[in-house]
Length: 247
Image 1 (tube, one colour):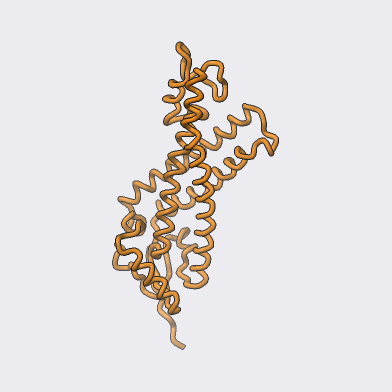
Image 2: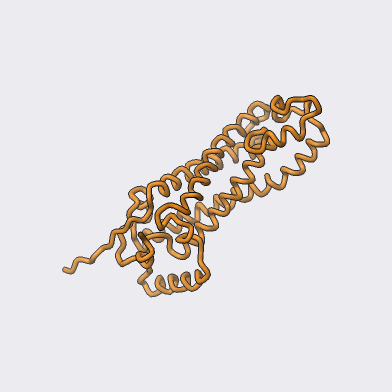
């Protein structure tokens, strides 16, 4: 009986794997606290203190999420080949790569990759762009809602009444703020909140699609995609299409 040769590759470096799991954990935390804030009245949460407390926890998790995302963006320029943006962001001829990959699946001999397959590249790019939007809008709302960094001091100084120390402002306490400026700030922050919420819903959807796609590829094509996010290595049935791109 002939033994089939397998090919082992170093797929994901340690920083990329750490980003993946920290990102996953923080997003789950953000979603949970975000949903509680969204439906707080239905849950019987009505006090201002509880409302502020929920936002503080949500924003604190958000800082970990944003820091992790910034580090990953930087790592995309200096990390290993599979971690770099040129191996993730679709190139000019990406549609040809998708068609070739789809054809290989139909023929029962799916191309295998050390990094992301062409569909995976597209999905990961969309997810990263969504995460950047979610991070940016979240930081703006952290500043407008509870005067947290990096924009909180700017918004607090804007709405504070003359002679009032902006650092003394308490979220949702309107006694020391200029009412007209507060109304203007509320109008300013509203679209950012809408974008933040719907981007979060989209990210939830993409997470489910991502998990389903990974499981399907793992079952149909093998390659140890799931285990690779723990070990950093992929074991493929065939030589990887992008093996020559790896250093």
